[in-house]
Structure formats: C-alpha cells, structure tokens
Image 1 (tube, rainbow, N blue to C red):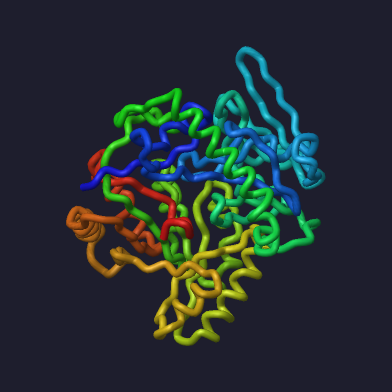
Image 2 (image 1 turned 135 degrees about the horizontal axis):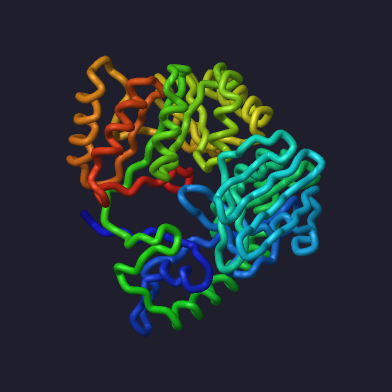
Length: 390
C-alpha cells in the first residue's frame, strides 16, 4: 500500500514536516496546505505559528482570532488567562455566556450553567488554540471554510459583514489573500532549509510515528434509529471524526446531538431525496435553514437518496459536494459479529481510499465498536470527510 504523508500544521518546526525536500533546481513535490483567516470583511494578519490547524480531527484557531486588539474586528468576545505552576485556565466570554477551558485538564465548562462541554483547548508553540466549530456554535458566530487558489480561507462572521463569502473571496483573492499566501510560503521554505525531517519522525500532534494505512472516511446516515450516542462515544474514544448526514425533516429531533457534533469537530451534512433536482433543492433549502437555526452552521455536503440521473452533477455545479460510498455498511439484518467481520474483510480487500456509510442503528453502533476494537494498529488512517477531500 503506497505510503502517504499527512499534512500537519504544528508551528514553525512542525510545519516543515509537511514539505518534501526538493533536489537543487527541482520543483517542490507537493505544496503544503495554507490556511488564511478573515473576520467579517477584513483579512487577518497572523504569524505563521498562529495558522489554524487540525488536531485530532478538529479545526483549531489561535485565541488571537477573538482578540479585537489584534484583529481589528470586534466579534463581541473577550478573554482572560489564569496561569500558575499547577493550573492554566483560559476564559472566553461575551454577553451570551462564558466558556472556561482548563488547558491542563483538557476540559471546558459553560460557566453560567455549570455544564461540561465536549471540547478542549490545546497549546501550540506556546499559544492557546481553540476549537473553531464549538466556540462559534456557543457564541452564535458563523464560519465558512473555503478552498481557494491561495490556500483555504477560514472566515468568521457575526452578522455585521457586508459581503458574502463568495464576494469576499472574489475581492480579496488577487490582493490581500495572494500577499499573505506568498508570505506564508516564503516562511515555510525558510523553515524547510533549517529542518530536514526523517520519514519516521513522530507527529507533534499525536506523539506517534506516522504509519502506512488505508485512508478511510466514515459517514453515518442518521434516521433516529437510537444508536447515535453510542456511535459518537466509540468514535471519540478513538479520536476519530466522521461525517453525519441528517434528513431535513428530522433535524429538530437532534438539537443536543447536533451541538455535540459541532463542538467536537465532526462534519455535518444533509441526506435528501434526489428523485428530482427540484425535490433535492427543496430538501437542501429546508435543511440549511434548520441547521442555521439550531447550530448556526452551513452544510456543504449532501447524500442523495434515490438519485436521478443528472441531479448530482447539477448540485455540484451549484457548490455542493455529493457523498458517495464505496462500502455500504448499514444494518442489513445480519448478526453484529457477521457484519463486523464482513466490514473488516471488505476493507482488507481495498487498495485505495474507502468511503464507508453506516446508519445510526444500535446494530451499527455495535458493529463499529467491534470493528474499531479488532482493527490492526496502523492498518487504517481515518480522515474527516471534508469537501476538499471527497
């Protein structure tokens, strides 16, 4: 199985791990992923070691993104830090509430209600980073994740922006975005010249040596079958993120679970009928409105049930990413043991990427738990099904 390098963003030194050293005069073998940030209608000027990063399948941004004195944009948030020899607490607050992150313990509490939140802060290059989706959901902010020719733009908005993300990218691409992108590349190349990582260098995100493994993307079609919490427990126990697909008409039943998904870095998409383009569009419109209302999130991925010819192509032309599975592992009436064995055998027989579709039944929850406990270490690399990957 061909060895692939994961792209890891871990500060100046760890960023060098992303690059394949080129021979003199030769072109670079691959370009690292660059993340740019904007807030409302302004591009941010952040240092390279403050670039957003994926940690354990969750997208993190530096706390500086919520510091108006740094960004020049008032998102309505303030922060405080308390650090002693034994404690490190980071507090983020607004009129909507207060989140207290115990950095050392890896916990987060909604201070007003005394409720533990399913997210944590991490420290990178001596700086606190916060989970973007969870923070935005809690404080009523929106964010978009937009791949462009100058890296991926992460834009946070609070309703006071004038431009849509599409218009913002169009206006900023050839100026502010290109300038920042080129500067990041220059700094990365400088870091490359001073650090030459070995092929078995440990990841600074996980502390583990990178290994070969079949890339696997997991998606769960949610239909209220009762196993969703068990599935989430299994995935989070292994540090795995997945795509969760909801039928629009059932979204209102999942309020607490949607917040858990958004707060822990899973991806959320929609599952709609594709019998006709009009029917698919109507379902997507309904689902988008409900997700905006429930978790202030805009989905980009759709699973088309009973897809008619041409519907997927039309939706992709409109900016949607259509999920299609390689392996249908939804419950089919067989015993849990038989289904888990069949899933392992199917994946063992693949030689390239595998997109696996589960459902949220109790049987599938048990299948997943058995599968995860029986898989060989290093056999699989579980990746989050982002629109930039699928």
